[in-house]
Length: 62
Image (cartoon, rainbow, N blue to C red; front, side, top):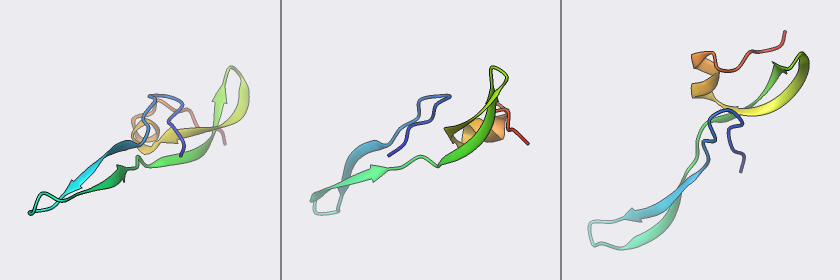
């Protein structure tokens, strides 16, 4: 599972808890996308979450 290269957002782990208080493992996955970006004048692929892409923290390469 990938991690955002900008903000460090990664999967969260926890439990589903039923009405009867039964617990089963579950994972909250962030929406991570592989994006072509410009970093230091070079074009690279990075993993970035959609929140970082949408906010403009990632400069996309054309």
